[in-house]
Length: 329
Image 1 (cartoon, helix red, strand yellow):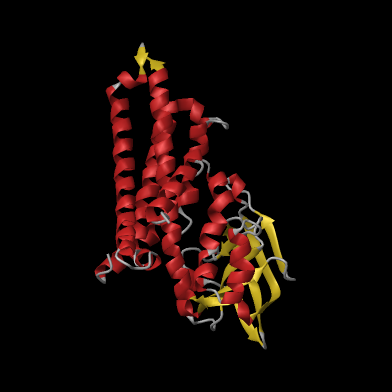
Image 2 (cartoon, one colour):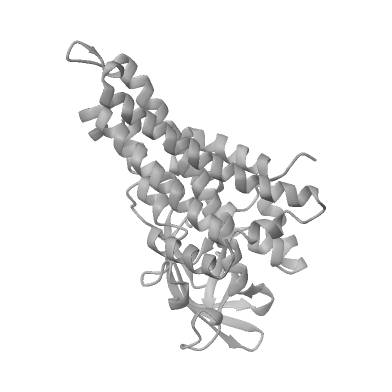
């Protein structure tokens, strides 16, 4: 009772108040994008053996999609799952896998179709880390140090056919929730950059007076606030649509999954807002923001970790445009 789209939005927004991508992703990054396909579309055995212990906090899971030569271009995935009797034999390398170092399970995008099958030849397969042939190694990324981002390699891994979650449409629907989550996180990080900036300009004196007395500084603060509040209002409007349909007797998941174009635009809007606010905060802090250990420096290193994963900006804008031309915006 009481759990709805607003609850999820507020909870994630408050968690993101820590302004650390490593903390947020380390706690919920892998779970938030790796578990929904199993929980909503997996068979009963998978739900019992995987979803339940993950929800109870006994196990962890990650989504393994991106590869060295395929990120936003899912149709170009090279990891293969070849049928052999009651098993799939999986071979391939995944890269930039959030929580890959911690995960017990991987919700993995694999090519079950032939080499020329494109997007529709991709499926989702649950692969346990303990299976022979699965290996992980850490990646040294610019930011989100606590996220356990990893390479995940599959070398002749035998996976039961019962671990098949479904086709690529499940993955595409899962992207909607991932992008909205990234948008929520990015906008809260932008708000934190704004908060830190306001604190700083009230204390810092230049040319004989506080920074807040400088018109150009006030303009920067107002512009940051305008962008943050506008983005937050957009995200709240999407929550309203989801909750309204649920209150009318619908399933909250279905309206959420129809927000493909809106989710793509929200992600772009939020990450660009964050990038702008992080940059402006850095300039207001001056040389302090170029030194490790400063909160603004830390935030600035998180920008690309949100702008690129879940679909890069150019891909998101084009996807939203194509969907809108089909009347799906």
